[in-house]
Length: 156
Image 1 (tube, helix red, strand yellow):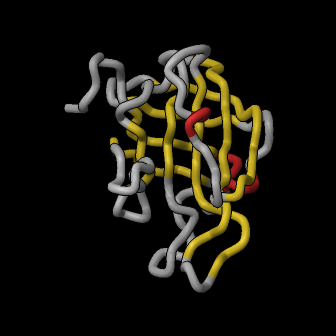
Image 2: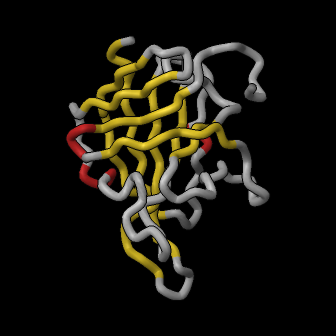
């Protein structure tokens, strides 16, 4: 199934009702440039399968597009509007779900950004949602920043 050492339930859907986010999730790995892969289908999110699953210790990281030329409004296009206290639900492939509460929303410039601290395998379970945001660079056809939403586990 996945390239993981354990059999923890994998995420299959992320929902943030207040932001009208409801997106299927696929397992992803590492892109050739060393960054986490983003699903080729701009309407799906990707869970970093080499990290913890939701409810396991450490960070479960899920990425998705904010939008693209072909798909102007991607699944995480409203993520910039997230606020502390919002609820995020993650459906798992074993039929259960994990609920998380947003604790932080950050807009960080991509230039020189080290995402390493967000990919941890210890400590309390938390969820990191990542997408692009901020200013659009026409010449690069990309956003100049990343939006990172951190949420702590609040229920299973």
